[in-house]
Length: 290
Image (cartoon, rainbow, N blue to C red; front, side):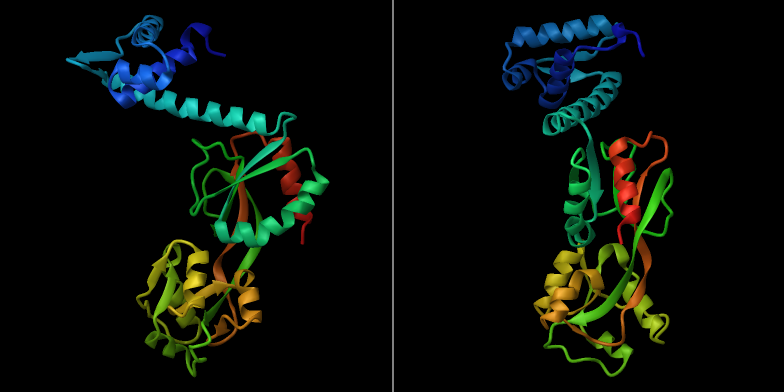
């Protein structure tokens, strides 16, 4: 534990952060509901405690020194994480919160229907969900774990495989089934921007190599799915996502059966953190869940 003399007070940090963001003690005072004099005293206390000059007074504006700017950036991240921890504590005062980052389509269509069962088995755990579209570094995040799609090539994490994925070429009923795979090149194509090689791989699977056709790009499966339903073009979509649309005839297969995707879905968590009890319960449950 660091000596307490190196730990600045939260009011002083809030004052410095507000001055950095707003540019004056008066603006910071208004935001913090303090007098300008009170803000100035907090800044003086902080400079005295740290033993360094933090602010440059430039006419009517206050500027942080370069070293202070680095300090306040780190302090801002710390204050944010402290606020998140406080919200988590208030949401679950008995403990046991699990902060989980999920991919939107997979999280809502595969995980969400199963969470009621987990909640019934583990009422002591509160699962907090937040969407992320791409893998990320756990270092500066408050997440305990995340669901990633890929091929186990993420550094610094442990992982549990959840599901393989199969994708099917589909379109609205106005598009007739194709006689040959290469006929898809005459159609408007829809594609996930994070999987720019999917159509080329699908064509190669069906004997049309070395093709990388242009396509309209989407950042999420959900919007691409709706674009396909409304007749904007052909799309490669996961089977777990489009079961109802296929059953109701809002989407129809274009050519061939579903094929295996390049990646799979995994629960991942950082190696360098102790695995808390809520995460241990969650991974054990997922391991036994069909």
